[in-house]
Length: 181
Image (cartoon, rainbow, N blue to C red; front, side):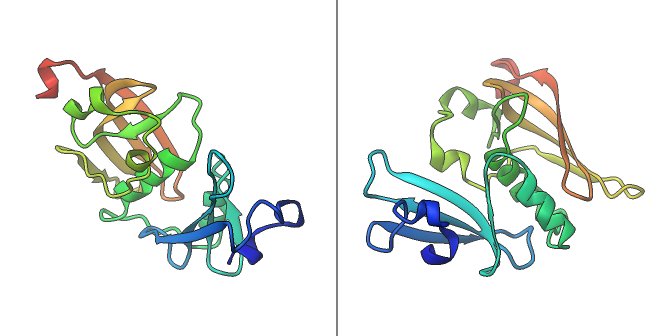
């Protein structure tokens, strides 16, 4: 797998001896997996993430280009079971103008989250307590009301996810100690 992903420019960056490849199934894509290549010979270690079906590889570079490609290929499957993993994935891999957004398990988790905790950021299975998910029957859009760390502030956010995977996040109210309980 390492040989298939790397370009000539990355020939020294990832080698089978010094690197590791891992993959994870994504429930919202039909046949594409999330791959991570990690070079353990550099300090600090260096990783690159890709979406791939084993034939084509799409680098996760902070833009939503790879997701748009999945949509155009008919790979994206959004439903009540896949919407939260999709949002966790989207917020982890797409850089947003409003800054970092992390769905919280609950509002009380906000003071304890470290934005540099990669393991927590990459947890696609987080289901916020009290999350509300609705689907508009006319447009197919999903509306999700959930607690989130929104640009480092604990907020209740309204998230709209269009049928083609476009995400819009609107802060509704600041979460305070009184409403974090």
